[in-house]
Image (tube, rainbow, N blue to C red):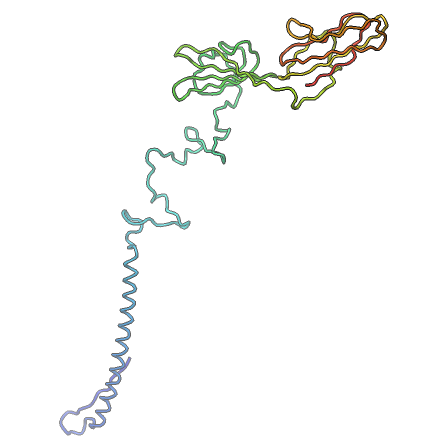
Length: 310
């Protein structure tokens, strides 16, 4: 800080106590220099302050007042994760399900990575339920493991199965039954009126052709002559049966018989004058579900070979 020098003027004119004129003018010059330096410094500081004030004003004009932070009509603050705290989020209205209900009883089921409800949340029963009730009374959408027979179950069925009951969007009722057996079957029916169910309809399995995934198998050890068998493969098979004569007096014939009652489809007779080790061979295509039998009649014939293309 600059200090100005005082010029002494004395108590009275020419009393000899004041500064000489030259000395007084020197002090005036020194004081002027100091005053000018002070004024220059003040002007520089004022200009700098004005610039800072202008910048602050421009920034303030673009900022949101701190008083609006977290206030109604203002702005929401962010937490330490850079997210809006739950207290500042709008309340969920109708049409929304609280997160706390996800996967809870009475709530909603979550979806897996494929957008489907996981098996644990499906309506399939967790334990086996043996129903002793009438199928006509099962009108609620659900799945039931059942033991047969029970009233109004599919006809002529024995064993266990799965009953699926569905109420369709238009109010119609639909039942589908799966027989869990060595030979599965599927049936369905719908409710025609409030009190009347339609007849059970069996869903026919598409016929499978002969050839793919089949092979010629030697089944001699599990077959016998004059014993009936059933083609339970679900597709056509071919049977080859062979007998051999044991003596020169052998007589009779060998045949493959199908159906109920049996009818011969291929017959091979013992030739006249046949000796030892003459072979009689028959073959036939056996449709799925049809019973068949290798039938030998006569003397001196021995069952020798049985193969099936199945």
